Image (cartoon, rainbow, N blue to C red; front, top):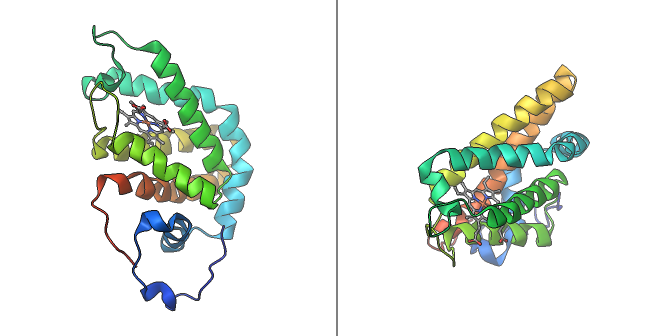
Length: 190
Ligand code: HEM
């Protein structure tokens, strides 16, 4: 985690636009959800399990997206068939996100990468389908949480699994808070 460069309650009062200081935004969210050093350890030590199953996890998520017309419509060609090439690219992108998230880094690079991922959904330049609705982003994160909890239950000792699930849940929702920024009008926050 990035160390705070100010004590809580000090220059926190200075309002800022999240996109101008993403490491601060992520750091503050981590603090808010109480993502501790212990959680970071739990995330990093369970990351190899996640990575080993990254392909199956991303395949399951995309299978779900394709199963319902309201999410499948973003992956179709004009003739209504699934754009498999595009889908494969998306699977790689999702696997990269999982990998980088598993490092539990709050580096400037990662924080702006996440902001860009959010903008790729909220301000989609290419059809089909236009903007990915924000509620589907929330739903996708729920799917990811459920899939990871199931994976940890089957691959780790009980106490390790519980710690990993709790820690990943916090981190995924910190990620979600970044992914949703592009949907909201720019607003100064504290
Ligand atoms: C947990 C939530 C999600 C994560 C972490 C995620 C991750 C990603 C990543 C990393 C990319 C590549 C962005 C880039 O080009 O730099 C991407 C693109 C994309 N995602 Fe997602 N995604 C999520 C949810 C969804 C949902 C719910 C849908 C639609 C049902 C969706 C549809 C797409 C599409 C269509 C693109 C391509 C954007 C474009 O270039 O037109 N994603 N996603």
